[in-house]
Image (cartoon, rainbow, N blue to C red; front, side, top):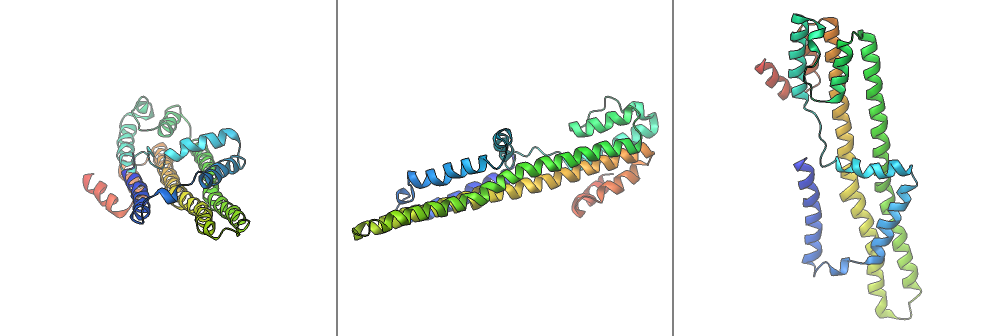
Amino acid sequence: MDIGSLIGFLGAVGMIVYAMASGGGIGPFLHGGSALIVVGGTFFAVMYTCTLPQFLNSFKVMSKAFMPGLPSQEDLVTKMIELAGIARKDGMMALEGQDVPDKFFSKGLQMLVDGADEAKLTTQLNQEIKAMKARHATNQGIVKAWVDIAPAMGMIGTLIGLVLMLGNMADPKAIGPAMAVALLTTLYGAFFANVMFLPMQTTLEANTAYEATYRDMVVMGLRNIARGESPRNIQDQMLANLPPAIQEKLENAA
């Protein structure tokens, strides 16, 4: 679990709830009709921006903002150097059955063992990376739809409330409470868009960028093993993708 994302989300919600409570309680900020317009309306509006399986799968994808399960780039470099040493010493067949951290790496390694040349290996693995990016973009587009539609639904709810309020101008005492209820839908829309889904979208995009870099590093390492490059050369090329602090750490450990 990504503790930072969880703390950030709970902290943001906590600050908002505290501000509500300090003004006299959260009761005035709760209204079923307003919540129904924003949550229910956004739910169904987002549903018809994509297919039903994509929509249902998007909720599983959203959980990855808190539980990304991303492999370690540092461990990848260490493992790739180890495999390069084995390949140079004992040949490609010695790589069969080696324990690797993820399916993408395992598939590429098996292709290497099965005798795939550099061009075939690179083409197939790069195609999988391209497909992954397209798949992630679709899922992130659904999350973005929540970001875009929730405030619009909030505004629709506010306009509905204003119409109802203006239709009841004969009772001046009812104007204040009716206006408050009308504004609640805007509040709900802004909350869902900017506290829940916009940070989630940003996190998912960052996770995709990280995973794409990881997979590019896998392709780079396996391609260089196929060429017979030395472990040191492979390490230097792979480290170029990592932050300077991690580069220094791995170089010192070598």
